[in-house]
Amino acid sequence: MNRRNSYWLTIIVTAVVGILFILWHGRIELLSWIVVAMGILLAIPAVYNLIFAMVTTARQSDKPSGRTTNLSSVVASVCTLALGVWMMINPAFFVGLMAYLFAALLVAYGVYQILVTAYFSRPYSMPWFFYIVPVLLVAAGVVILCTSVRTMNSVVVLVTGILLVASAINWAMQRMTLYPIRKNAEIGATDNRR
Image (cartoon, rainbow, N blue to C red; front, side, top):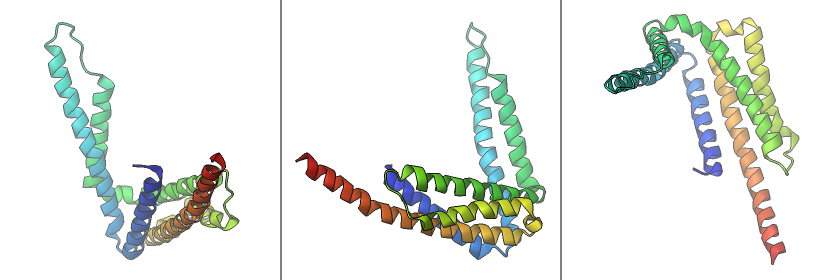
């Protein structure tokens, strides 16, 4: 997949997740579903890695070298599997931590968009208004981390959804603004070579 397609895929996924958060923000069980899904996403690779480690150990024990599998891989797999199962069985414990996760994701995504806008768009300078949404992402993440708003899960989900949709729109506008500029620069470079 080339860079242009990966940008658009990121924009589409961000918009879809944001829209789903906006539509489902009032559902109390939404965060529980997310925790259970994260538990499943932890448990599946842990089981695979544990089975792979056991098979590797069984195959290598037959060999004269007597080399066994890495113990740290087995311990990491068992711990990850235990965490994943715990998240699936008791998601209520982790729901309170989701606000911190959303806040951290907002800050990280905002910083990432600022870097992409400022650094990766070079040698072109993007207009100042493309920095508004990434700065709002960072600010919202910091506000969620530093205030008691994180106790209101539906507000956190709604704010996260709105900012993700705004971020997707902002990024799409950046791509559409930058594409003709780069295209004209490529055509000008081709003409200069002739």
